[in-house]
Structures are given as structure tokens and as C-alpha cells.
Image (cartoon, rainbow, N blue to C red):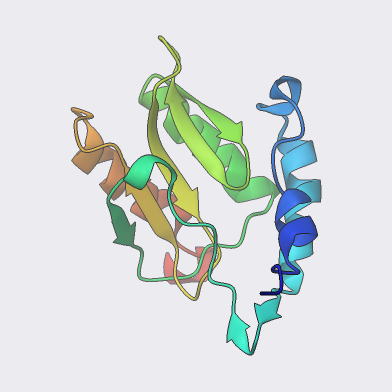
Length: 140
């Protein structure tokens, strides 16, 4: 069997050190490689999947990270008592204890939000993320 050749592409996006977990600029630099998504044996890479097997909810639009929507994401995180950790994709973690409650993936033709099922504000957070991450032209 041949090993997958996409390891370096995925590794280039991973959080290189815990000290960069809240560094938006470093995250934006890492996600630039997503402009060209690789394929293996003719099959396109869809993403790495959600962390911890959290339920995923499809947004009705594609998410493409930029300075504006990462700042909005950080505002929403604060509203819910969270901070944003920029790993392969952004994760919202509780300020108190660092438990991950949500992640937003941008690797497909639609955005995907992963939520911790036991998080008491999960539904509200999903609705809020869907509102603020909608493409600006869709809000007019």
C-alpha cells in the first residue's frame, strides 16, 4: 500500500505550538494552503472531520476565513464565555477550563459547525454562528 501523499498539506495547517492557539494572523497564514485542495486517487479531500465525534450541522453557505469573519467569530466566542483556538480550523473553547464546545469547518461547499451535545447553549450558539458567518452579500 502507498501512503497518502497529503500528510504535509494537512500538517502545514495544524497548530504548530500551543503558544499560537490564539494567534489569528498565524491561523490566516496557515489556511492559505486551502486555496488548492489535494486529491488522492482522483478523490477530493473533504477535510479532517470533527474533533471528538461531535455532531455536525451544515450551514447553507460556504465559509471562507478572512480577517473580518475571524474577528466576528471572536466576538461571538466572548458572548458565550469562550475564546477561539485556531488549529486546523477554529474551535470555541470555554474560558473557564478550556472545554471545547464548538468548531467551524470551512473545507467543503458548505460550512460545518460541530457542537458539544452537552453544552447548554449549543442551539443558541449554532443559530448565532449561522447569523454572523453568513456571507455579507446574503445579509443585504
